[in-house]
Amino acid sequence: MTSLPRIAPMLATPGPLPSASTDASYAYEVKQDGQRCIAYLPGDGTVELRSRSGTNITPAYPDLSDLGTALGSLPAVLDGEIVAPDSEGHADFQRLQSRMGLAGSPARAARVAKQVPAHLVLFDVLFLNTENLARTVYSERRTTLEDLDLTGPSWSTPTAIVGHGQQTLEMTRSAGLEGLVAKRLTSLYEPGIRSRSWIKIRNVKTADIIVGGWIPGHGRLANLPGALLMGQPRPDGLQYVGSVGTGWTDADRTRLAAALADLAIRTCPFTEQPSVAGARWVTPYLVAEVRYTSRTRVGRLRHPSWHRLRPDLGPDNLL
Image 1: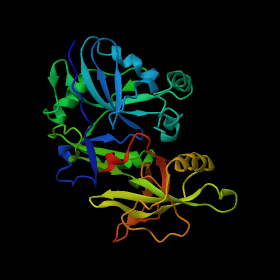
Image 2 (image 1 turned 180 degrees about the vertical axis):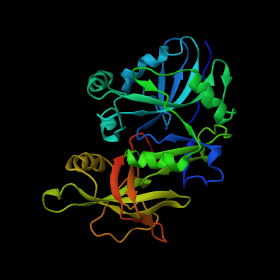
Image 3 (image 1 turned 90 degrees about the vertical axis):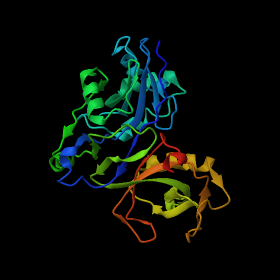
């Protein structure tokens, strides 16, 4: 049996749509709101799923196990995103959160899978048979992937559109989707690299942040976080980028309170202590995604609102 290489996922760089003059040099894929996944199919009927951080998440998704037989005895390494579709077929990250973190509880994962089915959206093939395809250009890898005809009960290979970026972005906006990923047709696969050959274009601005502290709420929220203090890693340490206190539910606050209690520390983890009254500090471990309108000159996020925790990421993934 072929030994499959471990391959870290290639990452996209945030940016605008490619210019009209270069539009035809890119393929456009719908940006999925889920958990990045590298799928290893050794050709013996099994499949191993690993997250962006390299963690083995296979036991959390028993409903994806049949993917191991999709290519018969042909070994492959595939790149994709695990999503939890809502009633309209759109990826819903809040639904997916009930599936994440269950790798250590296979019995519970099987029960939750019946209530919230997962779906693996495939968009790249990195290894096939005996050939490592990382040094093959995207357009050829994409053709190879489509020729595999990987469409099943819990996985699919959506279309990539060459050119027509502006129209495709408008389509995602009208459909309430997160945005696009533009991939240069001649790009090679760069494992573990945030490459400028792939551009993620969002319909809203978002940022991955690290929680470094929190401020208690008032009244009935006195023991729950009223706001989180956000940081982003820089060469000299964790830079404070503001606080976020909107966009979450009471259930979100309760879950966060439990996580923050376990991470409590006495000293400020930011390079410069923010002037925030009543701040409580935590080990900078939790990663979250927030939406915002713009940044100030010193890097603060303007009008941030809570979007989601990112249990699939650790602080090192943001460096």
